[in-house]
Length: 185
Image (cartoon, rainbow, N blue to C red; front, side):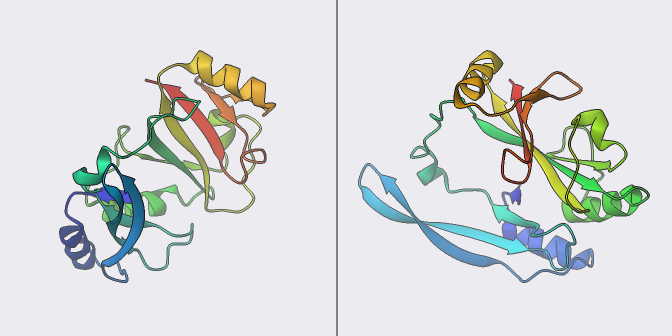
C-alpha cells in the first residue's frame, strides 16, 4: 500500500489516469489509547488487476492515534522504507510505466518501491530466487543500530546474508515469503 494524505484525491487521480480500482473503502480497527479502546478508521482503495498481488493506496493514519503506536520492537525497526518488486526480464519498462501511473509521477531512487528484473535480483540479494514473477521479493526496514539487529538475528538462529550494499537481510525462505532487509538510519 502506498500512503496518501488525500485518499479521495488519489482515487480521482487514478481514475483519470485510467487505473481501475474498487473505490475508497473504510474499515475500523481497535486501538488501545490512554482512555480505553477506540476504533481507528482506515480508508483505502485497491487497484484492480495487478499481477503482483494486492496493490493500493491507504490514507495517512489519523494523528490522534499515532501517539498510541508502539515502536519498541527488539530489532529497533522504526519504518518500512522500501518494497522490492522483481519482474520478468524484458518487462521492466512496462511495470515502471504502470507504477508511475499509480504514483502520478516518475519513479525516483527516493521512492518506496524498487523495481528490478529477475536477472538483476542476484546483484541486490545474493542467493535469492523468486518463486514466481512478478513478485514482492523483499522489504526494507529502517533501524537505528545494525549491530543490534545482527545480534538479535544471530540470537534467534535466523540465517543472515548481506545485500550487495552490505546490509543484512533474512532470506525469503526463512522470512516466510519475502526477504527482510535492515538499513541503518
